[in-house]
Length: 245
Image 1 (cartoon, rainbow, N blue to C red):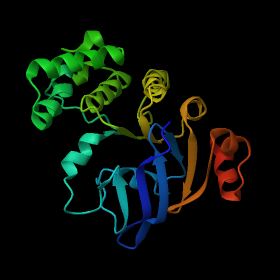
Image 2 (image 1 turned 45 degrees about the horizontal axis):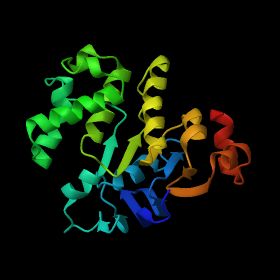
Image 3 (image 1 turned 180 degrees about the vertical axis):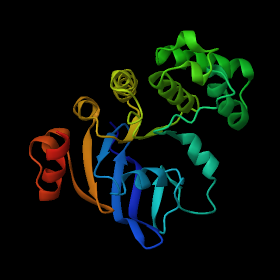
Image 4 (image 1 turned 45 degrees about the vertical axis):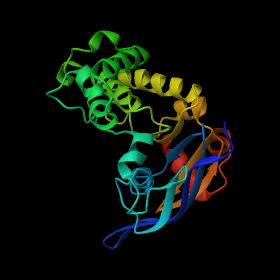
């Protein structure tokens, strides 16, 4: 892991009408670090994650990826999003495109690579996520776990430096969760910088360098998985973990 932060979040504030989703969050994530964000519904964790590639626009504060400001309206957000891949709870695959076409679309349109090069990369990624035999299948022919693995491959096709995962297994049947987490574990072992909103404690223990507990738009506590799960210091963290561990 490189000690230099690749993501810097300073005093992040986000309001939706009268609701303050983020109330001044400060966070730095190092290159190669895997950070798991946990917390109750409405705690601001997904809002924070979505702000990193400006799917949500902060009300105040600053976010930088490397030296690029995400929050500066003059920044080239398309360029930043090439560096920051995102995997959602719902798979967001294009139903009218087959698997190969779903994965190659962004590289072809955004990076202007050749069709041959895009297809070669897509096939390597499909092999990597265990779906080499599914390139001509359509999303409705795949299980939820397979669709999520295609979604991960689609994000990786842009060769990002950071991956954001917003509850990637919450829409899956229990038996499909492991196949997605295994792909994420492999990414972590390869040194991918990852921000993950999830309550998958097995993944946290196996892959996370740091666990962050959020509540009411603030970071309440952070530490190693061992520290947070075995010896939380804050009463609010303890109460939350009693319900999920």
